Image (cartoon, rainbow, N blue to C red):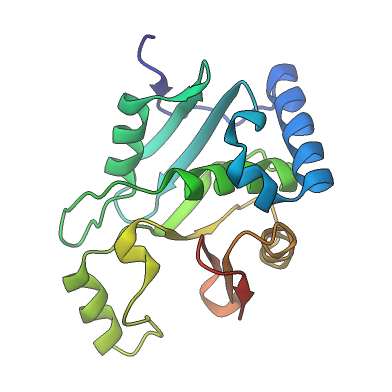
Length: 191
């Protein structure tokens, strides 16, 4: 397979993208995300995610799943964009988190890339942020590549939070004053 990502230039909704979103959303809503996480091949024949890292300005559109498997090159590109920019360290993001992001994007019918506030955090960065008193957990799932803080500019934050909670796939934190939600693939809970 050739190179599967490209930088974002526009956010138009093509017919193909609409059909993929519709089928993934319908499947997620009728069968529940928990079933999905165990049957990843049912999500879609192709899965693409789009990101803008708000700290580095980097953008990425990446087809990370195609032909029945994850694309290692695309996953490496995602790991790079979602790295700890403070420590310039990469980590392997959990594929279940990527699948959750994919289904959440389909569920909201967003036309925008994810705006990334924080994804992977090194233990050193996590401890520094925790000491600054910004509500960072000591054993944050960010340090395991299992959490991300995001927003979608064309979807209200409340709607994004509600859609994430409806998937019952992990933790969902609502940070209205900071304009982002936290999602992770830990046990289902919300705050």
